[in-house]
Amino acid sequence: MKLLFKLIPPLALILSCQNEQQYDVQHEIDYSVAKVRQTLALLPPDPPNIPRNITEDGKTWRYVSHSDWTSGFWPGILWYAYEATRDETLLKTADIFTKQLLPLSQEPATDHDLGFQVFNSFGNGYRLTSNEAYKPVILATADSLATLYNPRVGTILSWPRSVPNLEWPQHNTIIDNMINLELLFWASKNGGADSLYDIAVKHAEVTMANQFRPDHTVYHVVVYDKDTGKRIKQVTHQGFADQSVWARGQAWAIYGFTMVYRETHDPKFLDFAQQVTDVYLDRLPDDLVPYWDFDDPDIPDAPRDASAAAIVASALLELCTFVEGPEKDTYFDCAQAMLRSLFDHYRVDMPGNTALLKGVTGHKPNGSEINTSINYGDYYYLEALLRLHKLSGGPK
Image (cartoon, helix red, strand yellow):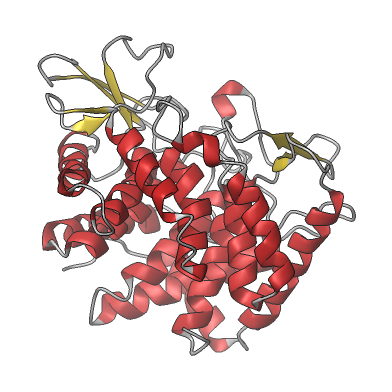
């Protein structure tokens, strides 16, 4: 495939990073795990005690319960810390926080975030321990998520409730939902119904056909007629404007379609993953960490979103394993340079703040979680570090 991006300013950074002595990935993993341990020491003993984001004082965590959409990222971080260390204390703690999310497998689905919540927690736990008690929880949650699928549309309903500008009770699908398809793929291959695989593939195909502009930038949300499946409108709910490119939305697309190719081996998904990647890379600022929205008129004074950089870095470290030729090296080098930039400029260095990354923007139009630390930024940063370590010759 011919690369679509020019990489003019970013390429200079990538080349300079190649010429510098590389930072020690193992040291950064160790440092991150140490920060995770510091956070553990701060947590209240009883729920709600899942750390979500750093508050306005710059050091205090805001805690949420198992029902919050971000609840799976903290146990996921603990599982990654255990993967890095094989520390039994971290394993026991990860298990405790994972089991807090058990009710999500027993309740009717309230939105698409079950994948973020349960697969990041129970899924990582099962991957690392083969604990058979985790498996039925994952399978039950996949079945629950599948109840939101509308066969007339071909996608999973993301928000089964009234959201401004989304024409409720019509059917809405957000790009974030791509990540949650991994739960369905896994379940279909580990004792769940074959239909779960078919739902995941169809969701990806319909999203690919309806959620992107001709240049392969993504809309945050598509609203469909719930009865006919016809597309009603495309909007960017969490971005600057409907026609603007919300950085984390593009990151979800890159990560999601890369994962779908891994699960299906269908070349159309690999080609599409590269196209949504290339347009993102082409628009990055020099430090490879995007502004929260690529089209915010306040740039260069607009806030960044370091979580988008972490998500894309992790995705590129998987995408580079699926391609050959110059694309393989470019994606790997880009991911490595992104992590180096996060390390140099967005790593938390404020005393008392035990998060990993700063400069994360959650929902700017809503005025919430702007230029702060949020658990999903830390989750994908640690995931990317572990992926880089393995690709660089660390333990598989």
